[in-house]
Amino acid sequence: MRKFAVTCCVVVLAVQALPALAAGSPAETVPFDHWAYDAVQKLVDAGIIIGYPKTNDFKGDRAMTRYEFAMAVSRLMDWAAAND
Image (tube, rainbow, N blue to C red; front, side):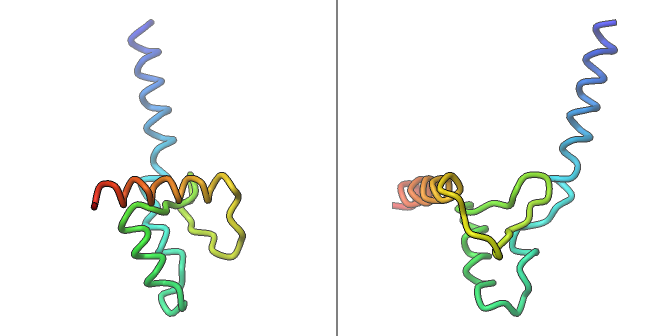
């Protein structure tokens, strides 16, 4: 019974991870001809911004929350410290 429960948990976790794995880069949701495409791609490549969970979208048409901004600044500080 325990082996069955563990197997079920692994299957459920794998199925939930599939949409995130199938989604491409957040920059893919920004039109290639958009004026900010290169900047978004540079930030994604550096790991400073990431897409939203499940959809991996950039959602550049909405304002960032304070929490999202704090995460981006934290990643930027980590990146700067690692590349100093």
